[in-house]
Image (spheres, rainbow, N blue to C red):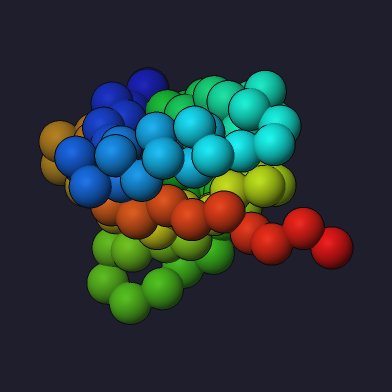
Length: 86
């Protein structure tokens, strides 16, 4: 059974800023798309657990914090940031 993935407004705005400022916009878009797909199908099987319902997931060049709400079959992404290039 699939989950609905929502990006909270602050996370969505941060992602838009990251994409706008990125040297490789396609890499940012691909990472966000892959995260959406992973979270929509199996949010508890990806990433790592944190306190309570919060988990962290990294798909280069992005990392996100998200909460899984099982009763509603909902995943809420509430923070996103870009990892520095190495």
